[in-house]
Length: 165
Ligand code: K1U
Ligand code: ZN
Image 1 (cartoon, rainbow, N blue to C red):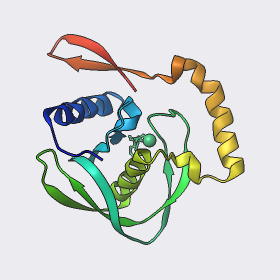
Image 2 (cartoon, rainbow, N blue to C red):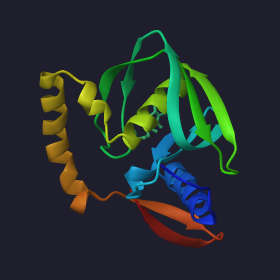
Image 3 (cartoon, rainbow, N blue to C red):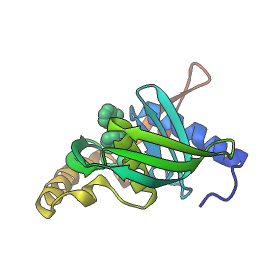
Image 4 (cartoon, protein in one colour):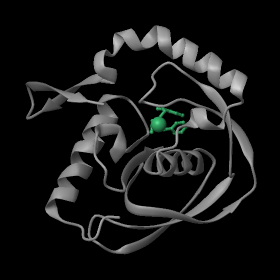
């Protein structure tokens, strides 16, 4: 749990947005960048969210949809998720907020909150499908030495640097 929203947390959020955009994702959770704080960022259809200590407090329905993950690039699987969710969290200013999401936002919220619990979409696949996905990943992961995916970050105009994901 994040006990208080400090400048360090705000800097983490800012870095996470930068990494998420560089990796062309719509969400990112702190464990994906090697941090243990319960923090996630999302940008779904132009709506930006930075959520601290998010918890799903209500959910409705079930819908199957394809998912990928920035931490296991090029691997996809069909996952059943709640159609809509209500999430309670704390924002960057330390205020309690509630986010209601359906469709892609609901899927993204569930995927990111799962990351904060150490869970990946692979965990929802059948044994056969998970084995197939992991076999595929076995071939791809040579492209990511040390399981680290580097993305190009653009800072201060012309200056380029690398982020690790
Ligand atoms: O946490 C992550 O790995 C990011 C991941 C989150 C995600 C959200 C919803 C469905 C699946 C996965 C992604 O950003 S996947 C890549 C993506 O940009 C995307 C996914 C679905 C629709 C549109 C874009
Ligand atoms: Zn993911």
